[in-house]
Amino acid sequence: MSDYKFLQLEHRAGCATVWLNRPERHNAFHEGLVAELTNCLVRLSQDAAVRAIVLAGRGRNFCAGADLAWMQQQAVADYDANLEDARRLAWMLRTLAQSPKPTIARVHGVALGGGMGLVAACDIALAARDASFGTTEVRLGLTPSTIAPYVLGAIGERAARRYFLSGERFDAEEALRIGLIHEAVDGGELDARLQGLLDDLRSAGPQAQAHCKRLLAALRGRDPFDPQVAEQSARSIAEVRAGAEAREGMAAFFAKRKPGWI
Image 1 (tube, rainbow, N blue to C red):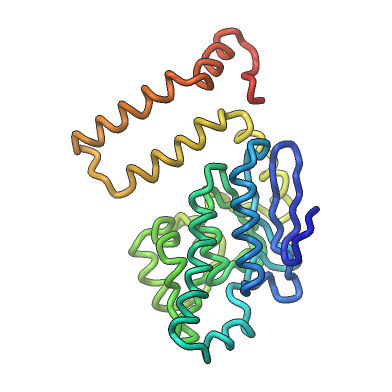
Image 2 (image 1 turned 180 degrees about the vertical axis):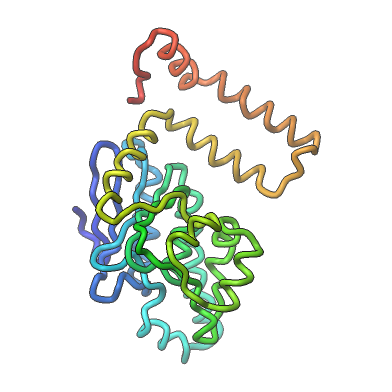
């Protein structure tokens, strides 16, 4: 466990699970939770012993978005105070999305507003079949601004247009169809499926995984027929092949043994 007030942190077999721990408030964001989560993600991203980061929620729900009391405070604050508050939330989401570690959202109950942003910012998302999602901000006269880059990247503009504008909730089947989550399983099977995925992630080279994430970011939105893209991809694999981790991985494969990172 950890000394965080609004989080619980567990380490097991190279995996760090970060539990949002405000179950009485459905793990809704407020200033303290945002600050702790940012700090925790920075520390875990820099920890060589951590192979993967799981984001989960205590209680009945994953994350219900912004805390209503916190939102009331911002409603009477001036523009500068609102800007600083929004920047802290945006930086937390950026920290999650840019972590060099594989990140997994373990979703149950609701993932609304900022909670859906957390799901979209993770590399992989698993959800219980009875989970529900939504960008409900417009129903309060607000917009899903800080989460928009990540939700747009996950579900595409067409689906984002519908759900940003309607604010309607949708189920795990729809989340799977539009690409927000990768798998939907029965609630009782969620942790077993998560464990299987973590086993797969631990079998891969950590430096290769971090390189994959940098490569995907570098290629986002680029024309695949651009000669510079071809050159960049060639340089990418050459850089990896010349590294010690790739040499160990290939040597282990041909020797029919496990590589040193397992």
